[in-house]
Length: 103
Ligand code: SF4
Image 1: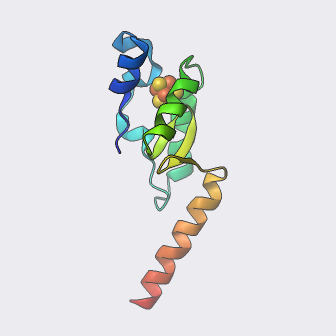
Image 2 (image 1 turned 120 degrees about the vertical axis):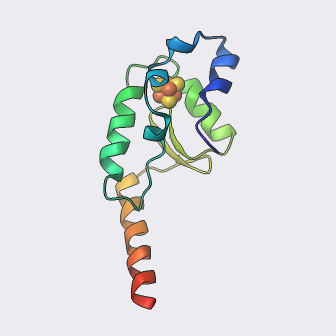
């Protein structure tokens, strides 16, 4: 599911410009673990979320909707918080290497 901040704004009845992420490319919040720039993009998204005073609600929305990406400054996959995104990235790279070797 895409990062739907519209839902968050409606729920909180916030003006569109009240959230730091509204001034940012939404793709920033969807880093791909198999991409070499995954951690850099993740940190950039978390930096945007840092000053957000709705991060708790945002995270709850991401979990409740089974979303993936950065929500409330946390990296989620299908609504689950990934505690160690660097480890997740390494697993993704190993899987890609195995598939490449098997081809
Ligand atoms: S925590 Fe991040 S993604 Fe969520 S509303 Fe705030 S700035 Fe946007």
